[in-house]
Length: 165
Ligand code: FE
Ligand code: FE
Ligand code: MG
Image 1 (cartoon, rainbow, N blue to C red):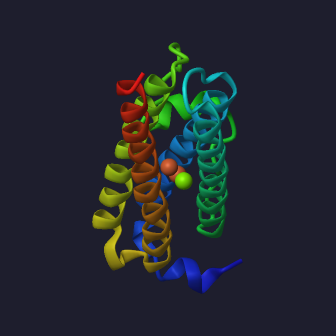
Image 2 (cartoon, protein in one colour):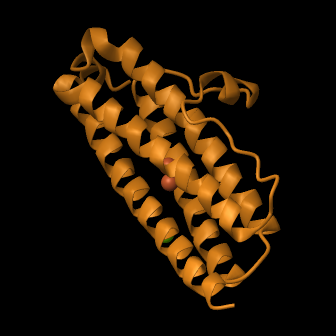
């Protein structure tokens, strides 16, 4: 299956698969962090925050799907046990122990900043050794940059709101 498509990646397949599975773990953890955050968040501007968190959760799940598709194309196997997510993740998981909007937003902003750093380094490392994965990482990076900006804009609006109370 896809023999020529794999052949062009050649000797780099092992490393590319390693990077992809680590990103795959990140995406699932990011998905859950957003999703559960949207369920428990409390405080001002809650509805706007919930809408954004749910939209981002859907994006992270779509990223997991994109990364998984590439892993399979390269002949690899996506992590099959959620326990492996914690062993492989670059960005970890920040448990939303404080439900206040500001805390939830700040945790997710730091998650996005880690995702930006991670995809940028994947892009730098892979370069033209695997143009398909490179393109995938660029597409995902564009979303992560947008996510960071959306959350920082919400945090800024929230700051104005809180100051006027
Ligand atoms: Fe993502
Ligand atoms: Fe994101
Ligand atoms: Mg958004």
